[in-house]
Length: 235
Ligand code: FES
Image 1 (cartoon, rainbow, N blue to C red):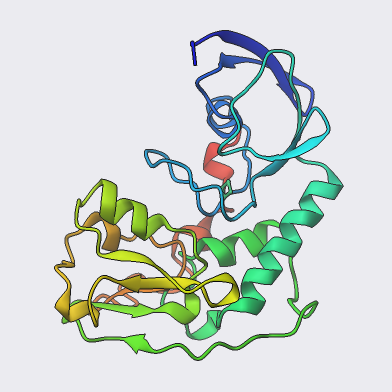
Image 2 (cartoon, helix red, strand yellow):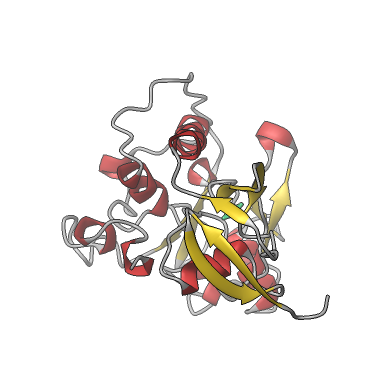
Protein backbone atom coordinates (compact mmCIF):
# COMPACT_ATOMS: atom_id res chain seq x y z
CA UNK A 1 0.00 0.00 0.00
CA UNK A 2 1.33 3.47 -0.87
CA UNK A 3 1.84 5.68 2.13
CA UNK A 4 -0.66 8.57 2.01
CA UNK A 5 -1.36 11.30 4.55
CA UNK A 6 -4.98 11.19 5.70
CA UNK A 7 -7.23 13.15 8.02
CA UNK A 8 -9.74 11.48 10.31
CA UNK A 9 -11.34 11.85 13.73
CA UNK A 10 -11.38 9.79 16.93
CA UNK A 11 -14.27 10.74 19.21
CA UNK A 12 -14.46 14.06 17.38
CA UNK A 13 -10.75 14.89 17.79
CA UNK A 14 -9.27 15.79 14.38
CA UNK A 15 -6.08 13.90 13.60
CA UNK A 16 -3.70 13.43 10.72
CA UNK A 17 -1.90 10.17 10.04
CA UNK A 18 -0.55 7.81 7.45
CA UNK A 19 -2.34 4.95 5.69
CA UNK A 20 0.51 2.75 6.90
CA UNK A 21 -0.57 3.33 10.51
CA UNK A 22 -3.26 1.47 12.37
CA UNK A 23 -5.97 3.29 14.29
CA UNK A 24 -4.22 2.07 17.47
CA UNK A 25 -0.86 3.57 16.39
CA UNK A 26 -2.46 6.88 15.45
CA UNK A 27 -4.43 7.02 18.70
CA UNK A 28 -1.34 6.33 20.81
CA UNK A 29 0.62 9.05 19.05
CA UNK A 30 -2.22 11.47 19.70
CA UNK A 31 -2.40 10.55 23.39
CA UNK A 32 -5.72 8.75 23.06
CA UNK A 33 -5.88 5.42 24.89
CA UNK A 34 -7.64 2.47 23.29
CA UNK A 35 -7.72 -0.57 25.61
CA UNK A 36 -5.68 -3.56 24.44
CA UNK A 37 -4.32 -6.81 25.77
CA UNK A 38 -2.84 -8.71 22.82
CA UNK A 39 -1.24 -5.81 20.96
CA UNK A 40 2.28 -4.71 21.90
CA UNK A 41 4.34 -2.01 20.28
CA UNK A 42 7.06 -3.52 18.09
CA UNK A 43 5.25 -6.81 17.42
CA UNK A 44 2.96 -7.65 14.51
CA UNK A 45 -0.62 -7.37 15.79
CA UNK A 46 -2.48 -10.61 16.43
CA UNK A 47 -5.95 -9.06 16.58
CA UNK A 48 -7.38 -11.64 18.96
CA UNK A 49 -8.46 -10.07 22.26
CA UNK A 50 -10.84 -7.54 20.65
CA UNK A 51 -10.51 -5.17 23.64
CA UNK A 52 -9.43 -2.57 21.10
CA UNK A 53 -12.68 -2.71 19.15
CA UNK A 54 -13.79 0.70 17.89
CA UNK A 55 -16.41 1.75 15.38
CA UNK A 56 -15.00 2.92 12.04
CA UNK A 57 -17.69 4.77 10.10
CA UNK A 58 -20.20 2.80 12.19
CA UNK A 59 -18.61 -0.61 11.62
CA UNK A 60 -16.87 -2.49 14.49
CA UNK A 61 -13.17 -3.15 13.76
CA UNK A 62 -10.08 -4.12 15.73
CA UNK A 63 -8.12 -0.89 15.93
CA UNK A 64 -4.78 -2.71 16.28
CA UNK A 65 -5.09 -4.19 12.78
CA UNK A 66 -7.21 -1.58 10.96
CA UNK A 67 -5.32 1.11 9.00
CA UNK A 68 -6.56 4.69 9.19
CA UNK A 69 -8.52 6.05 6.22
CA UNK A 70 -9.17 9.46 4.77
CA UNK A 71 -12.24 11.01 6.36
CA UNK A 72 -12.74 8.12 8.80
CA UNK A 73 -14.97 8.74 11.79
CA UNK A 74 -13.72 6.56 14.65
CA UNK A 75 -15.69 6.06 17.87
CA UNK A 76 -13.74 4.81 20.87
CA UNK A 77 -15.09 5.87 24.27
CA UNK A 78 -18.81 5.21 23.79
CA UNK A 79 -21.01 3.50 26.37
CA UNK A 80 -21.65 0.68 23.91
CA UNK A 81 -17.94 0.02 23.30
CA UNK A 82 -17.08 0.28 26.99
CA UNK A 83 -19.73 -2.35 27.70
CA UNK A 84 -18.35 -4.61 24.96
CA UNK A 85 -14.89 -4.28 26.53
CA UNK A 86 -16.32 -5.01 29.97
CA UNK A 87 -17.95 -8.20 28.68
CA UNK A 88 -14.76 -9.33 26.91
CA UNK A 89 -12.76 -8.70 30.08
CA UNK A 90 -15.30 -10.55 32.24
CA UNK A 91 -15.20 -13.53 29.88
CA UNK A 92 -11.43 -13.79 30.32
CA UNK A 93 -11.90 -13.89 34.10
CA UNK A 94 -14.54 -16.58 33.75
CA UNK A 95 -12.55 -18.72 31.31
CA UNK A 96 -9.35 -18.92 33.38
CA UNK A 97 -8.37 -19.13 37.03
CA UNK A 98 -7.57 -15.54 37.89
CA UNK A 99 -7.36 -15.56 41.66
CA UNK A 100 -5.87 -12.10 42.07
CA UNK A 101 -5.29 -12.16 45.85
CA UNK A 102 -2.93 -15.13 45.55
CA UNK A 103 -1.40 -14.37 42.14
CA UNK A 104 2.19 -13.16 41.99
CA UNK A 105 1.25 -10.89 39.07
CA UNK A 106 -1.30 -8.93 41.10
CA UNK A 107 -0.62 -5.23 40.67
CA UNK A 108 1.39 -5.84 37.48
CA UNK A 109 -1.37 -7.81 35.72
CA UNK A 110 -2.88 -6.06 32.68
CA UNK A 111 -6.09 -8.11 32.92
CA UNK A 112 -6.65 -7.11 36.54
CA UNK A 113 -5.72 -3.51 35.68
CA UNK A 114 -8.15 -3.50 32.75
CA UNK A 115 -10.94 -4.64 35.07
CA UNK A 116 -10.14 -1.73 37.40
CA UNK A 117 -10.02 0.73 34.51
CA UNK A 118 -13.36 -0.51 33.18
CA UNK A 119 -14.81 -0.39 36.70
CA UNK A 120 -15.74 -4.04 36.80
CA UNK A 121 -16.57 -4.56 40.44
CA UNK A 122 -17.73 -8.16 40.16
CA UNK A 123 -17.37 -10.91 37.60
CA UNK A 124 -20.49 -12.96 38.18
CA UNK A 125 -22.20 -12.56 34.81
CA UNK A 126 -21.11 -15.92 33.36
CA UNK A 127 -20.34 -19.34 34.87
CA UNK A 128 -16.74 -19.91 35.96
CA UNK A 129 -15.16 -22.63 33.85
CA UNK A 130 -12.43 -23.36 36.41
CA UNK A 131 -9.95 -25.08 34.11
CA UNK A 132 -7.50 -27.51 35.69
CA UNK A 133 -4.62 -27.53 33.25
CA UNK A 134 -1.26 -28.77 34.44
CA UNK A 135 1.30 -26.37 35.89
CA UNK A 136 4.72 -26.76 34.26
CA UNK A 137 7.35 -25.95 36.91
CA UNK A 138 10.02 -28.21 35.40
CA UNK A 139 12.42 -25.38 34.45
CA UNK A 140 14.82 -24.17 37.15
CA UNK A 141 14.01 -20.48 36.55
CA UNK A 142 10.56 -20.37 34.92
CA UNK A 143 7.09 -21.81 35.50
CA UNK A 144 4.08 -21.84 33.20
CA UNK A 145 0.55 -21.74 34.63
CA UNK A 146 -1.73 -21.95 31.60
CA UNK A 147 -4.85 -21.69 33.77
CA UNK A 148 -4.02 -17.97 33.68
CA UNK A 149 -3.30 -17.78 29.95
CA UNK A 150 -5.53 -15.31 28.07
CA UNK A 151 -4.25 -16.42 24.63
CA UNK A 152 -2.87 -13.01 23.76
CA UNK A 153 -0.01 -14.72 21.90
CA UNK A 154 2.52 -12.19 23.12
CA UNK A 155 4.99 -14.84 24.37
CA UNK A 156 4.63 -16.72 21.08
CA UNK A 157 5.40 -13.67 18.94
CA UNK A 158 8.26 -12.50 21.16
CA UNK A 159 9.82 -15.97 21.29
CA UNK A 160 9.58 -16.24 17.49
CA UNK A 161 10.38 -12.71 16.38
CA UNK A 162 12.69 -11.38 19.11
CA UNK A 163 14.34 -14.42 20.71
CA UNK A 164 14.20 -16.49 17.49
CA UNK A 165 13.59 -19.61 19.57
CA UNK A 166 9.97 -20.51 18.94
CA UNK A 167 9.59 -21.89 22.47
CA UNK A 168 5.85 -21.14 22.70
CA UNK A 169 2.92 -21.97 20.45
CA UNK A 170 -0.77 -22.78 20.63
CA UNK A 171 -2.30 -26.23 21.00
CA UNK A 172 -5.99 -27.16 21.03
CA UNK A 173 -8.94 -25.40 19.46
CA UNK A 174 -11.83 -23.24 20.59
CA UNK A 175 -12.27 -23.18 24.34
CA UNK A 176 -9.41 -25.71 24.68
CA UNK A 177 -6.87 -23.54 22.88
CA UNK A 178 -3.92 -22.68 25.13
CA UNK A 179 -0.28 -21.84 25.02
CA UNK A 180 2.20 -24.71 25.16
CA UNK A 181 5.95 -25.27 24.70
CA UNK A 182 7.78 -26.96 21.84
CA UNK A 183 8.87 -29.96 23.97
CA UNK A 184 7.37 -32.24 26.59
CA UNK A 185 8.00 -29.60 29.24
CA UNK A 186 9.72 -26.25 29.78
CA UNK A 187 12.94 -27.82 31.08
CA UNK A 188 13.39 -29.59 27.74
CA UNK A 189 13.13 -26.35 25.71
CA UNK A 190 15.92 -23.84 25.26
CA UNK A 191 13.92 -21.19 27.15
CA UNK A 192 16.10 -19.00 29.35
CA UNK A 193 15.31 -16.51 32.08
CA UNK A 194 17.07 -13.91 29.89
CA UNK A 195 14.69 -14.41 26.94
CA UNK A 196 12.53 -11.43 26.03
CA UNK A 197 9.56 -13.82 26.02
CA UNK A 198 10.11 -14.44 29.73
CA UNK A 199 10.53 -10.72 30.50
CA UNK A 200 7.97 -9.05 32.71
CA UNK A 201 6.69 -6.91 29.81
CA UNK A 202 5.69 -9.91 27.71
CA UNK A 203 3.09 -11.94 29.62
CA UNK A 204 0.29 -9.55 30.61
CA UNK A 205 -1.00 -11.88 33.33
CA UNK A 206 0.54 -14.46 35.67
CA UNK A 207 0.92 -17.29 33.17
CA UNK A 208 4.71 -17.06 32.75
CA UNK A 209 6.25 -16.93 36.20
CA UNK A 210 9.87 -16.04 36.95
CA UNK A 211 11.00 -18.17 39.86
CA UNK A 212 12.96 -16.68 42.76
CA UNK A 213 11.72 -13.11 42.36
CA UNK A 214 8.22 -13.47 43.78
CA UNK A 215 6.98 -10.45 45.69
CA UNK A 216 10.33 -8.61 45.30
CA UNK A 217 8.13 -5.53 44.81
CA UNK A 218 5.45 -5.66 47.51
CA UNK A 219 1.77 -5.62 46.54
CA UNK A 220 0.53 -2.06 46.84
CA UNK A 221 3.66 -0.65 45.17
CA UNK A 222 3.40 -2.28 41.75
CA UNK A 223 2.80 -0.62 38.38
CA UNK A 224 -1.00 -0.69 38.36
CA UNK A 225 -1.27 -0.17 42.11
CA UNK A 226 0.19 3.25 41.41
CA UNK A 227 -1.56 4.21 38.15
CA UNK A 228 -4.49 3.24 35.94
CA UNK A 229 -3.59 1.15 32.92
CA UNK A 230 -3.31 3.38 29.85
CA UNK A 231 -2.96 6.59 31.81
CA UNK A 232 0.65 6.90 30.62
CA UNK A 233 -0.62 7.07 27.03
CA UNK A 234 -3.35 9.61 27.58
CA UNK A 235 -3.13 13.36 27.14
FE1 FES B 1 -6.46 -5.37 19.19
FE2 FES B 1 -6.17 -7.29 21.04
S1 FES B 1 -5.41 -5.28 21.09
S2 FES B 1 -7.38 -7.33 19.21
